[in-house]
Image (cartoon, rainbow, N blue to C red):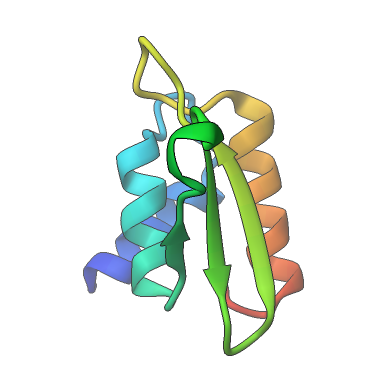
Length: 85
């Protein structure tokens, strides 16, 4: 099982401890590019897949490292709708 397959399987299992770093790694493996808006973006991070014209906005959690439940569900749903997983 590849790293990509493992991360997809983990995301789809809706874990309570899915970290921002895992989400970023998965998005990178799915050809997303991180698009920070400089100092004004704060903790909002945009990921863009130019091939499929999909944009995902994630709030980088702090001080914890895990995404909130709704963020994990939204991420999985967006990737499913885009046909990427």
